[in-house]
Amino acid sequence: MLVVDLDGTLLRSDILFESFWSALGKDWRVPFQAANSLLKSKAVMKRELAQSGPLDVETLPYDPDVIAYVQDWRAKGGHAALVTASDERIAKDVVNHLGIFDEVYGSDGERNLKGPAKAAFLTQHYTDGFAYMGDAQADIPVWSQATRAITVNAPTGLRNKVEKLDAEVEHLQTHSNAVKPYIKAIRPHQWLKNVLIFLPMMAAHQYDVGTFFAAFFAFVSFSMVASSAYVMNDLLDLAADRAHPRKCKRPFAAGDIPIAHGTWMAFGMLALGAIIAASINMAFLGIMIFYYIATTAYSLNLKRRIVVDIMMLAGLYTIRIIAGGYATQIPLSVWLVAFSVFFFLSLASVKRQAELIDTANRGKLEATGRGYQVDDLPLISQVAISSGYVSVLVMALYINSPTVMQLYNSPLALWGVCLILLYWLTRVIMITHRGHMHDDPVVFAAKDRTSQLCFLAILFCVVWSALL
Image 1 (spheres, one colour):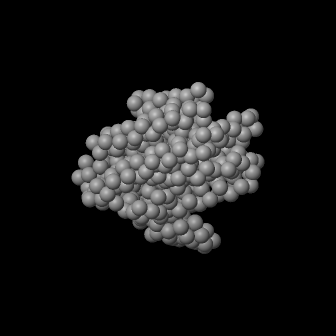
Image 2 (spheres, one colour; image 1 turned 135 degrees about the vertical axis):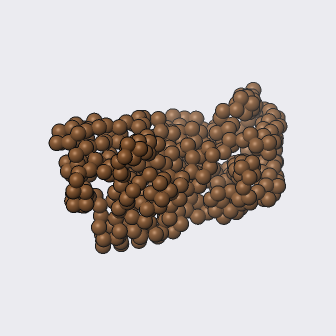
Image 3 (cartoon, helix red, strand yellow; image 1 turned 120 degrees about the vertical axis):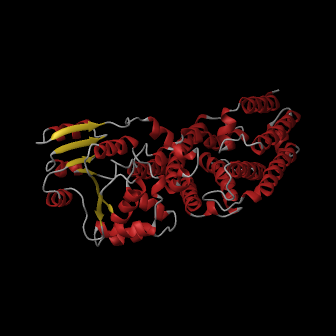
C-alpha cells in the first residue's frame, strides 16, 4: 500500500491556509472565528474553515510528478491511499477529482491525522506494511513505521534524518527551492508607483539632503507595506487567479511558494514598513496605517463593487503623494492633488477596461472576482478618457497660476507636458481597446518604449521650464 500525504506532497500548497484565505475573502470575521474554534481543537478549526471557505479542487496546484508516481505504482498492481491531516471532506473531493486513489482518510472534527496520531492510525490500519510519501518534519513518526520512506522536495536536513531510519528511502525533487518566486510575489516592479512620494518635494523644488532622505525612507516604508498588501491580495485572490489564463502563473496560485510562507511574508513586511514609518514621523505612520486599512478593505470587499473599486484605486495612488507630503513636511498643492485624482482615476479605469476586454476575449460575460460585466466596457472606456482629459485640463489651469510664475523661469514650456500627456493617455486607451494592454497600465508604461520616450520628453519640458 502506498500512502500519500496531501499538503506539500500531492498538493503544492496547504489546505488549512487555502481554506483560511478563501474564507477570509468572504468574511472578515474569519480570523476571530478560527481562533475560537482552535480553542476546541485543531481538527474542529479545520472542519469549520473547510465549511466557511469551500475550495475548487479542480484548480488547486497539484504536483504532476507525484501524480505520475502514484499512477505508476497502481499500474504495477499496487494500491494507493490519500491520508491527510486536512479536512476529510476536502480530501474526498480531491480523490474524486483525481481518480488515482483507492482509499482516503482525513481529519473529521475529532481526529487529527498528523505526526504520531497518523503513524498509529496507519500502523493499525495497514498491518501488512505501507510505503509513505511525505514532505515535512511532522512525517518522521510515520516514516519510522513505514517499510519504505519517500520524501518530496524535502530539505537536506530532513533527508538526512529519514535516511537514518530503518526503512528503504527514496527522495523525489519535483521543483527547485528558488528565490525568484519570492521576489516575484512581492512585485518589486510595482514599487515604481511609490516614486510618487518624491512628487511633493519635486513640485516644491525643495532638494535639500534632509528632505531627500525623508522621502527616500518613506519610499522604502511604502514599498514594504505595499508589497505586504500585494501578497495578501494574491492570497485572497487565489481562486480568481487560478481561473485566469495569465494570473494562474503567479507564485501562490501556481504553488511555487507555500501559502504558509506567504502569510508570514505579508505580516513580516508590514511590520518592517511600520517600523520605518514610525522612525520618520507619527503623521506618516498614520497615513501608512490608513493606506493598509484601505488596501485591506479593497482586497476583502471593495474590489467587487462597481465604481467604488476604481475610485479606491485612484485614491490609493493619490495617498502616495499625500504620504510624501507628510514625510517631507511639505504642504501639498491643491493643483497636485486634483491632477492626481483625475489622472489615476483614468489609469484605474484603463486597468478595468483591460480586464473586461480580456474577459470578453475568453468568451465570458462577467469578470471573475469583480462586479463588472462585459457590457460595461463602453462606460468604463468613457470614464478612462474623460477623467484623463480632465487631469490634463487641471494641468493647463495650473500652468497659468501665480505659483508657477514663481517656481519656473519659462512656464510656457510646461504646455509641452500637457500635449504629451494628451497623446500618451489617448494612445494607452487605444492600445487597451485593441486588447494589447498589460493588466496594470503602470507596468505597461515602464516597459513600453514609446511611454519611456514620453516620460523623457516630459522631463525635458519640466527641466527647460525650471532652468532656462
